[in-house]
Length: 434
Image 1 (cartoon, one colour):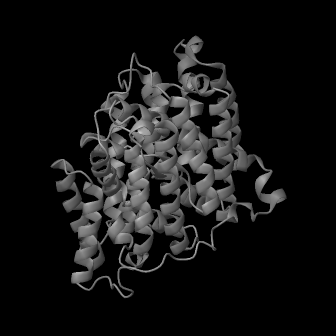
Image 2 (image 1 turned 45 degrees about the horizontal axis):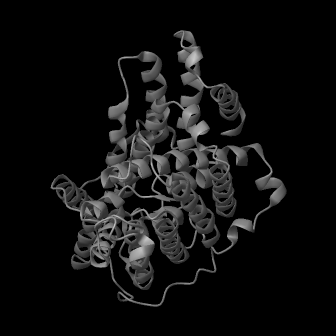
Image 3 (image 1 turned 90 degrees about the vertical axis):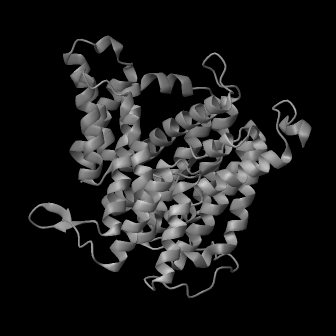
């Protein structure tokens, strides 16, 4: 093991990697309960999604550790699950089975792109500003979902949305969770989002708002409701359509840049980046893409690298053994499915809100003084929550960015692929998003 993971070379040990793996697990364990809540809104069986989430994290993290030897864990991604449930299934009216197929297909394409080393060309084709805008917009979108699930924001026929009744017990529970999580995050506590979720769930049980009726431990629920469902689709009506192509490309776009950004950020913190290059990046991207493909077969939305892995790096994780340990902790988590009974919308809402805040910090990279950049970025970000659609925000950004750059006289700075995407997204906005 020492030789395989190069523990000595990286000045670490099995114990140190184990502690780092546990730290990373605690920082991202909230996804075990948030993901079933979000995909459950799309009509999926929450017990099966819980198992699929844990298995995808188990397989993905171990693959990352073994193939790339990086201390970076994987699990179904936040934002991607929201796009899956609220845009593709609820918004477009697709079946969740067809949405799983889109995840599978985007994973396969990601694998091919990685094998044929096309990733640099694609990364260079998309402007940095649109990458940051996409991440920030998704952050606002999932924060909005969290505020709605908490009852803090409610629908209003006169103003579309308004402040909810903050005195109801479930909403008060959510507010407690938000405040506690904010305190933990600001204090720099590793795993703050998970601990905030846990404390909120405990308070819900103590006050009787939520009932822990089935204990804490049990055998994992059946995976049967979701396993292989990605291929239980109407191929003519659901798969071979232009709308499906847009969905697949959107999944691919989000996960591609989310993964690349996360890998670079965590690897920089760990000291792996040399001369602005990341060693073994092809292996890392291959592991990530393969995990998405496998996760879709289990029955969950796109799997991606987690920036929470930085918490494990901060306590000494330096090799892939950290990711392997994280995966094994997800395996143990399979036996805690009864906790789903008390992890309600109000309990998971604070996690959505705070993770949304973290994602929105990407806006600091935008040069707001240049209007040809500020305008498409603004529309990308603001229309995701306002239209309840991640794809609509991306589409508007990819239509407006070439337009503003051409008008400004900066057309030569655009990659030819941007003009192709300009046409594709105009077609999407005009005919397919209804």
